[in-house]
Length: 430
Image 1 (cartoon, rainbow, N blue to C red):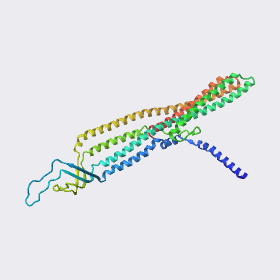
Image 2 (image 1 turned 60 degrees about the vertical axis):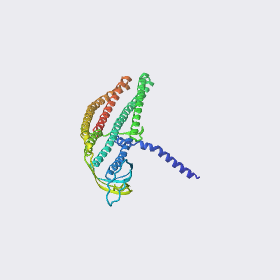
Image 3 (image 1 turned 45 degrees about the vertical axis):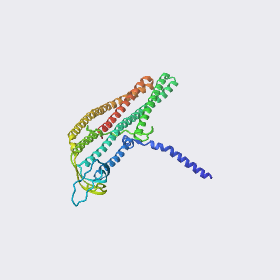
Image 4 (image 1 turned 135 degrees about the vertical axis):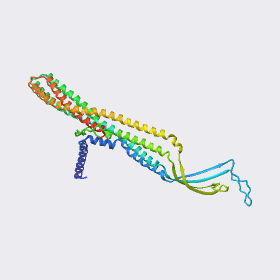
């Protein structure tokens, strides 16, 4: 193999390895938004598979219901032995003697019927099946909504960890700079070793806090990745959601609310089905058979036969339970309405808490900005005094920790506000 070929292969291998190395970085650099996570939950969470399966079940069930208007076909047969048969013992002049029928009798026949009027039963059953399918889909929506609420919580946990990490890293950078300056001052006999050690201890404490934040962040990312199926890792960049408007305190878009409404519709249709059960049915029918005796009961021979006509069937006994069954359904409708009222009360209480949380955070953020502005000035002055030797490390750390706390508080309040807004969005079914 020539040197040129070897060099070409080495170059290609280098390019391939480089692409393999940078490709994860390209993927990881993608921004992760809350909306994309929620959309992924709707797409990838296992419960969503039930929707497609339920649609298939609904289609097959609807087809089965429609078969009620297809001709009904039955093949029937029987063989009997009876203790007595009809006999004609009256002598008739110039008429041959009629042999008695056999006590063993047989028949096999095909019965075909076609419904002409079913009192609307098929239409009602079709509607009930459609409602059943919608109920199953709403159950899936309720499951997904609970998962979405978890994703929102963990998403903002990641954002909170990111903000606090940035604040602590900035403070750590300042501390490390001060450690170097004090160490230099100590080396020249200007500062004490204890002052340097105090700052070093604080750097180590910040490292501990950063370790905790990184661990919490990683757990939150892993849970989001599991629930959404996005395959995220620690390099994923989470973006603060845009500010959203508050939603009115109406909950008709909530899947639980829609589920209760569908349940009421089911009960109303069941009432109509009960009513239809008390009405007569009309159908055409025809029979074709072979047996002994046939339609001629004076003949003891095997013969074929046929007959047809109009059939009326009316289950009169259905009136016994009609009123009670309808009352049960009506009471069940009232119970469903009570469930809806209880749901609205509970949701309204949650809405009140979240709305108050948003208003409180707004007021706190305004104060946080003032506190941070003042604390930055105090910390800057304390830092200058430390460098001039007119202040101790402990005094400076007190002010620096005050600055860190003020920034963390504002970050916490901002994230709490956005989190409450998104929770309110989900709460109202939007």
